[in-house]
Length: 456
Image (cartoon, rainbow, N blue to C red; front, side, top):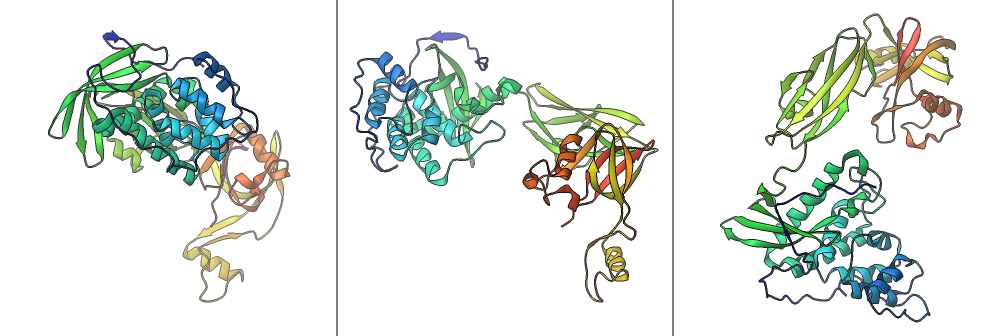
């Protein structure tokens, strides 16, 4: 893994991980963490190891087994190091270890300090280490309560009255590092490997505003500082100027259309969300970000392939872009059918009719599927079941509803495996795709798109 982006500053200073400023002599009494979990006990009969220095502690911890390891040895090693340090798999120990191991770790982390506070904020913010930045995996409720309690104690021990400012800056720092790292840092556990942490603050209050400098320590022991200003509002403290006020390009998430969508009408409506954006352009036309969220961005299509470039920008002049390909096939037709088999070059289908609303009630009543006074909402008529082959275009677009009822692009090979029973259908809505009809977009005698029809 490449190192995550480290923000540069003008002044390099001596590293400080104590959590107090150079002239800060205030001490804070911190209650012990026995309230977080039962007191730790040794889970093995072996005597604890003899650890004489930090090197011994690191060596012991890098070989520590969180399921069968010696808790007394763990405590001794963490005390020598002062708790968490960059490179230690602390979140994995908490996720995989025994109750005693977890309690011993959280007790040490709750004492505070730069890296202890940093990792507690990261764990509370992003969840378990098997999650990713954009797809977090939450802790079990009881464990999250313990982590949150330890985080609050560590923040108070490290930053005192500035704890509210500190958590706002640390969370922003974590987001900034991960966004700056981009696609390189999408694998599980990246969020707790950020190579810098907040050490302390120097400044003063003026009403609901705090202004001064934040000091940052890197995982190499180097320190730096930067000006920063925060203001307190209804949602807590927020950075308004200086360090991390504008830290990265906006984020764009396109919910519709999926890449490679085929349409038989000359317009497509885009929908999605942006984060930290003040302006959006689609195919060169400007919109407000809320227009995209409401699905009010309509783009006219030319026949054939359309490359829609979506650009989001903010007041800092930073921008992000996403390109979506949409095909407009004016000569194609859309027909609905059940699929029984999909191969490499052809699909076996049974064309049907679908009715919605009052028309569905009338058709179902006409076929004897419902009686007078009954309503069905959606009705599929298969008057003359007939299986027939239809050619597949090379690499057709396939859209299938997943178990969360989100229309998801998949490969044609996976669709064939699901129909044949060679793939597990539990992740998909309705189980086997043979139970739901599909809209087939057919152009020049070939299926160019297979889109599942949702039925309640």
